[in-house]
Image (tube, rainbow, N blue to C red; front, side, top):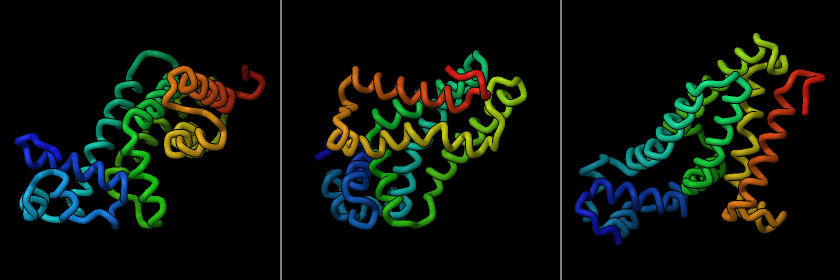
Length: 204
């Protein structure tokens, strides 16, 4: 049970854990308040509803991701190098915040519209990647093609690895908790990305 004096913070921490473990539909307000050590009316008092609490939980994980990647996008380097650093940052953030891939899996299973905080963060991320891809195309360092599709391809593998990390371990034997294995997998993805973005005849 969370024992911090900050009830709102405790509710967010408990909700994050339970939403990641059980999904939105299978998490009750009673379970959240019980885990947080709050009274049953605390969710209504601080967030008005379970849905609003859920949105705040998603925002608490999605916003730091965008801020991290936006900072990386501003770093020096040519567009292809910055895109690779964004992909690396995306991968590491998802692995070090395992609740986020778990939340995404639950959302995918529900087949409902993407929640606002995730949609906004991913839209902004695609905007960053689109801009860098267009810059690289203008300079001739990135292959021609639809920037939006190239942006999707850029983050697909890191996202898949983070979301399917247990499958990768159980089926293919890649334990992403092992630092050496994580580096091996990430380096492979980045090599794949570089080759995919490089202009024809200019691939490693």
